[in-house]
Length: 337
Ligand code: CUA
Image (cartoon, rainbow, N blue to C red; front, side):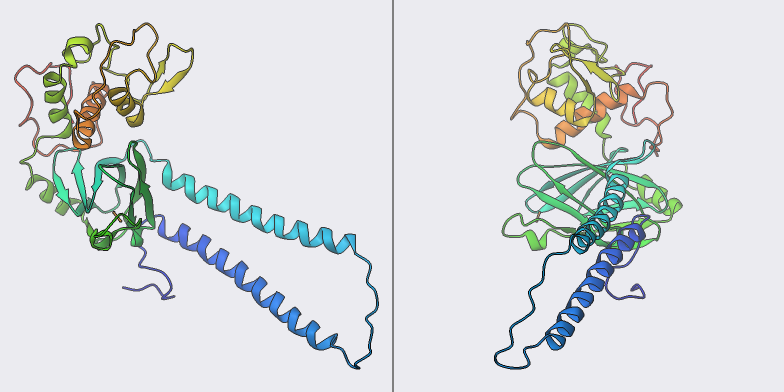
C-alpha cells in the first residue's frame, strides 16, 4: 500500500510520520527558497537589464539592515531544522527500558538475528505489532547498515562496537530489510524481511521455534568453558575479578577515578581489551579474549551477564518454554531470560 504522496515508502512504525514530517519540512523550505530566489533573479534580470549600450549603473552602497535580515532569517530557519532533527534522532537512538531485545550480527553478506528467547533467524526478523523492539547490533567484518524503509529505521553497524536502535511497528505485514552501506561484492543482495505479526501469531511463531538455547544460557556455558568463573565466581558473584551479578546498567568505579556505565559496549570492551577500563581494586590480571570469542559468543556472554542483573525482576521478554535449557548446576536465584 502506498502513501497518498507516492514520494515516501509505506509507513509502518511509530517513527514513520515524524521522519516524514521533518523530510517534508526540509523539502518545503528548500522548494520555497528555490522558487523565491529564482523568481527574484528572473525579475531583476528583466527589470534592471541594460537598455542602451552605454548605460552605466547607479552605484549602490551596502545596507546593514538587509544584510542582518538575510543572516538572521536563514539562521533561525536552520536552527528549527537542527532542533527538530535532533529530537527525531534522539527518539530513535535512545531505546526505551522495556523494549524487547533482538541481537543482530551482520556479516558479508547476511543478517544474523537472535531473539532473547533463543530463536535464531537469518535475513528475517519476526516481531509483534505494537511492541517496542530494541536492536543490539554489531558486525563480524566491515560496516553494514540496517535499513527498514517502512519503519524509517536506519543505522550503521560498525565493527568493534554495539549500535542500538529501536522501533515499534504499527502495521502487520512483510517489509524490506536492506543493507544501506556498500560492503563488498554482494552488498546489493544483502536483503531480507521484517515480518510484523499479531501478538498472538508471534507467540505461536516463537513457541514453534524453541530448538535454540537462549543467548543467556549459551553465555552461561561459555562463562564456564572459557574459565571466566574461576575469577568472577560460578554465578558472577566475584572473586579475584569484579562481581558481575547485578552490575548491568549501573555505574562502575574505575581505577583512574572515573566511572563508566556498564552497558553492552563496556562489557564487550572488558572481554576484548580487559585493561582498558580497570575496575577500582582489581589488578590488570585478566587476559584478553580477542580472537577467541566470535561476535555471536560475545553477544551470548553479554546476555548472560545481563541475566544475572535481572534477578528478582520480571523481565519483559517472554519465555515460551519456561526452563528447557537451564543447566543442572544452575543457581536457584538466577533468572534466565
Ligand atoms: Cu552489508 Cu552492504
